[in-house]
Length: 352
Ligand SMILES: Cc1ncc(COP(=O)(O)O)c(C=O)c1O
Image (cartoon, rainbow, N blue to C red; front, side, top):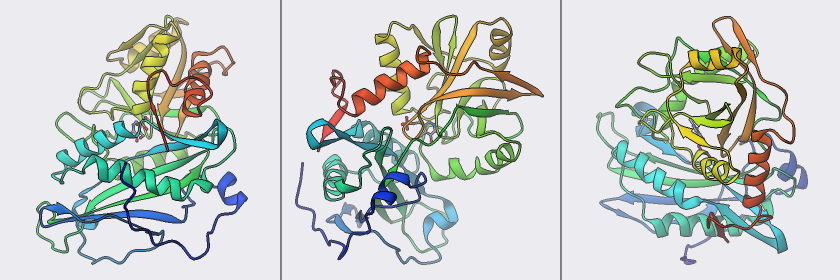
């Protein structure tokens, strides 16, 4: 991978052990960031510079028309002092799929993966040592026109920043099945990692949080009947011993963790089904004692057990997690692969 990116180093690192090990998710940034611009039909030389504020026109494209997408994946410490990115190519491919959907230019693989590799190598001392800790890599890509004309921008910027993080949720989560607001609909941008998808979900999440839930469980935008996903995770149900997750039919994000979980669950001997599951089926299976677990899967959340789903004045409670639960076993296996403690049989790690 290219190592020819010009680097302007920070004069003095801001790193402390407390920042590295105890920061709230996404609140602390490492010393450097990658910046790459697209203009006049081509990508310019990417640069690595100290992390810090940028200056933009008030007419900047994403401020008005939301032409902005992003990604998220992690670098972990592995034994013998090494470090590894988990499936960064999948995020690269998804970023370009989102870019195509939002009428943005394609990003070359060497620019993206080469730039990320350089950046993480440079700021490797920021990777947490604690169990469940990682350096979260956050690429963001947006138009940088300064015109109020509604059209795809003529200039674009890719920025990659990194944050030392722990797991997003500290405890099993409580979700509110959302009937009033929807996240996505057929033909929309639900399967892209578009910034606007998240903006549209903030009110529902805040209202759910005011009622004591961690987030919402989105239902489909047409019938408000089929489970889709949660705020930052895909969801799985363990029903009759099988793991069921909604299909990738254009309205949910094709999660890299979801895909990894499907592979690992099969290897664990747990049959998997990618199929629609209605909230009514969730209710009736729960009442019949067939629905034994529900959990979320995502880069930030890793594998997050769901303690409760609230729907129409009813609380579906799930038993507390034990070491033998599917979620706990899946999480342990995934983290063991990510941190190089289990063999990387699927070639998911990019060693850096
Ligand atoms: C809406 C949404 N769904 C699912 C996911 C899980 O995707 P991944 O496993 O690639 O992180 C995320 C997080 O990126 C998300 O924001």
